[in-house]
Image (cartoon, rainbow, N blue to C red; front, side):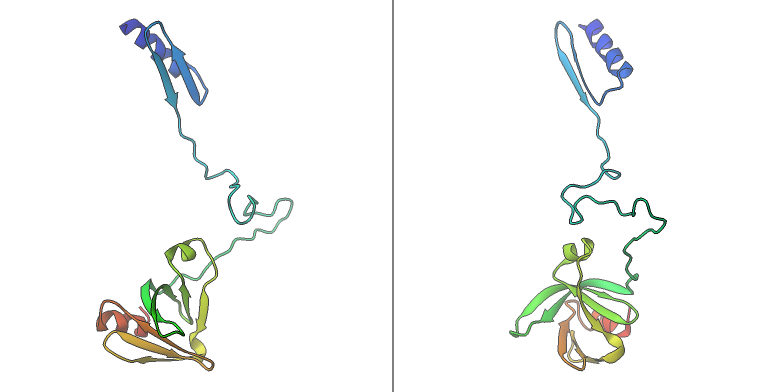
Length: 155
């Protein structure tokens, strides 16, 4: 039995295949080696498995985002006057909100509030309001006035 195990191990080490099955008189050993999919094209992705780089071209197109000054989950008052959880990112001149963190991570476009043409006002212990030309947005930081102040002051 011990000799069969040793010979199975030697066969496994000497083979270059990903899945190796070795059978002996008393047992069968199967070894699976994991492979990274990081360099493979994804067939489920939204771009249909296309490369990030344009092949046959000298130009490289990579989508980038500005690094947020602050980001996190916050409550936003909807037009129906109900509070909904949103994932918010604050950059130097924009406040962008997403339905959830997954939308942000998948690089879905969020709803952008241009802060260059807005007025931000503290409107309660946990709340602040962003007044734009067209719309008023109400937000509530769940952790109190300190968290609200961080959002209003920009980080």
